[in-house]
Image 1 (spheres, rainbow, N blue to C red):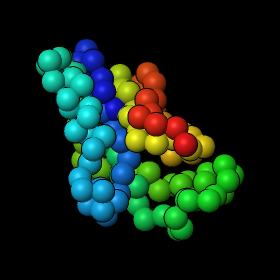
Image 2 (cartoon, helix red, strand yellow):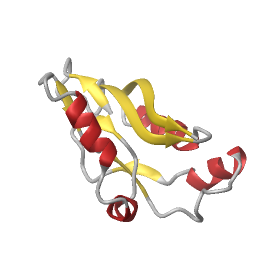
Image 3 (cartoon, rainbow, N blue to C red):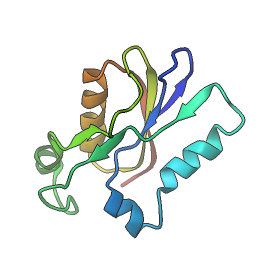
Length: 124
């Protein structure tokens, strides 16, 4: 998520699995976000969400199945900086049904962050 540093904990969060990032040769969304804000030192970039192992691959699943598959699987990564009051922008690589984005927003709201928007690099 990208956030304007009105509060010290503003962040950019993109939920991802470590295995998936390795398979794709790294985390291109984080690299893209860092490049986008390189000239804006008041904006922080941080991966504060991760996805615990899914019950099954979401390829081919419909909206309701994706919602069930992702429910409770997006979690805060480690011990991120305090999020209460942070203005954030969730950034994801591809949005198909929005299930992961909705679950990410739910987790961030529960942690006290204010999610300004969700930005997808592509839609499927």
